[in-house]
Image (cartoon, rainbow, N blue to C red; front, side, top):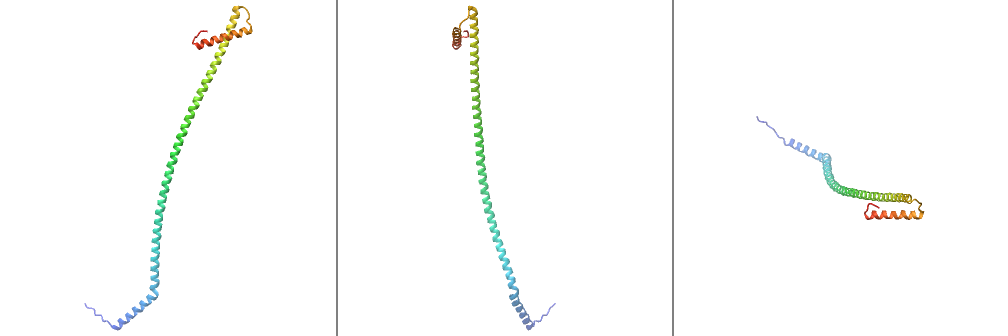
Length: 172
């Protein structure tokens, strides 16, 4: 099958003129807004890409700053924990030291009180023994002993008793 197309040069010229006119019309009225829209869109895309890149860089910078701050906070927390632990250990040591000192003081006070009470008891026993010895001597002699003599005898007896205790004798 054969198609026979006859080309008329005037039809071709008419078509060529129509395409030219259409091209001039499109170039004057249609292409500028379309090209402007394409350029605007390209500019917006480039600006959006630049803004996204800036935001990405800002995010990276912020991330680095936050990581640095986190390291600083961790370091400060470690220092604070170390200091708190050291302070707690020092406080515990001070408490133990104060408790030991208080214990020693209480023992020393108790020993002093015991010694004082022992001395009072010994003094009372000495006085009682001396009084008893004086009464026995009065009964044995059958006469009253004057106050001055009785005091001297009581004192001598107490001194002998004290001397025998200091010397290690158990009998007066």
